Image (cartoon, rainbow, N blue to C red; front, side, top):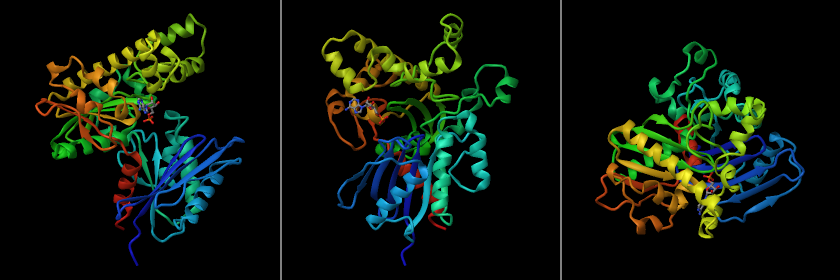
Length: 402
Ligand code: AMP
């Protein structure tokens, strides 16, 4: 009998479940899909087998995560990839907040579940959804190893001077207030893949990773370990994002409460959902913003400029944090696709050894590639992220050989 080498990766959100089934010894992706709008009348499951089968869609209300996972299991079974297959080695779950407890991928047991639950106040929207996904998957396959891979884990190597806010220590410690960072799976994957692209050992490579999706974060990675990242206690800090403000003077919040009469929930909504690109110009999709700029739309131009200015500040800051930089790597929806953002973010940074070759930058590809001229002191790379593969890899490393 062949050893079990498949890993199912589950990313359970509050009203959605995304999944991928990978075969780790064949280096193959077998199926991918998502269930969205769970709990609503308009739920939808889209399943794509990647072994030549047809993409399938199901409508009709999916009441909860348990029903969603049962439907996913049925779709996989229809392709001969069912959850009861002896070839399934483990399920890997994306978990958003691991606090300071979880510095590595962790096999899930009751104690681990209790600890993820204890971290709910730090990620009130995400951890409960992740827990529901884990509990449901465990009820479907109680005998199967299940592994939690945390978004925060890669950043737990940040030194105290980067992780602590300069506020009263007792208050900070009592409420676990510090910078945790997010998108860690992507920063880990991309920093390693960038070293590989340069033909260097990750342990000897310093990389600035710019994960620019709808959420966006930057990290400074020295020798494979994160030493600083732009997101903080929550994913609100740092870069300008699709709908989040990123950095601002904290006094803006008291001002909104005292002067504009907003309560905490209203300010939370304003900064997380109605700010960033959407707040500045009404669109959070960089493609649409670029189209509007071509039509000389001023609000779109200003939103783009503010986005790029913040990005530039973080690139400069992380050059200073790292001292020596081998590469700057762009990833995620905007980073991988928006050549004008990459160009604008690095324009004028020759002094830091950063240059972009216009022709290389305009090439569209889904492969890791360099966009700096060969004689650039610092390499500039575009490296497509693959969080599912990274979760599967970490899961398999932990349980696949047992
Ligand atoms: P992600 O969160 O990584 O899926 O990134 C989503 C974002 O990527 C979208 O909101 C778009 O702003 C951006 N995006 C995707 N494709 C393109 C493209 N071709 N050009 C510019 N931006 C893009």
